[in-house]
Amino acid sequence: MTLVLCGIPLSNYHNKVKLALLEKGIAFEERIVATGRSDEEVLCASPLAKVPFMLTPQGPLAESQVICDWLEAAYPTPPLLPADPYQAAKVRELCTFLDLHLELVVRQLYGPAFFGAEPLPDKFVARVRGQLERNIPAFQRLAKFAPYVAGDTFTLADCAAYVHLPLVAIASKLVIGEDLLAKAGVDWKAYVKFIEQRPAAQKVAADRKADEARTARMAAELKAKAAKTTA
Figure 1 (cartoon, helix red, strand yellow):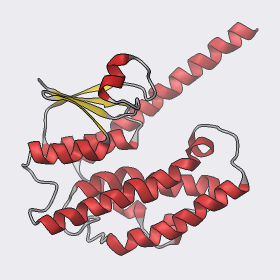
Figure 2 (cartoon, one colour; figure 1 turned 60 degrees about the vertical axis):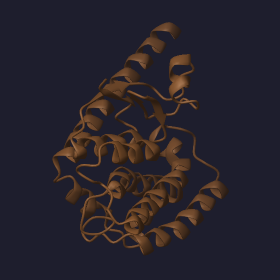
Figure 3 (cartoon, rainbow, N blue to C red; figure 1 turned 30 degrees about the vertical axis):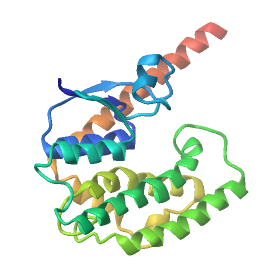
């Protein structure tokens, strides 16, 4: 059975797993599955109906870091974690900071930043800003950018950093009014440009752009249909 990555190419967590698959050269099928679906087939694989999830010969797996760790164990070559257990734990530490302490915090701003939602209350935005201004320097204490986020080798931490850092920067700029990563001295644009020299990252970026266009077309079609219905 070929591995099946289920989700949407617009999702940063989907692309985190996809980048790991491509970097490892693992054969896989990509299946478009929207988040939040309530059908039993999806809930059996991802109980919270979150994407991505993966279908494997042994059964389904949900949660991007769990999937990445399984890929590393099941397909150890080429490695995306150091052989030394402590250094491998340091890479996972970076992944945790990126997922939980940066992306999950800034995700609270995605509605108005990317999806046309109403502006958030000033108190809410100020709270998120405070969290980011505390968490970004903490991340900087761990990140090396030498030239990869964990050191001189591409790792799973880069799979997370490549997809998360632009969202942290752009969402904070759009909603808070400042790119909080750049303000803290994180040159995320240079880092992303460096990672996109890799064919796997180029593939992820191209597929994401294509899915953005597909989503925009669908939104336009739904808007036109709604206009006809109310005319």
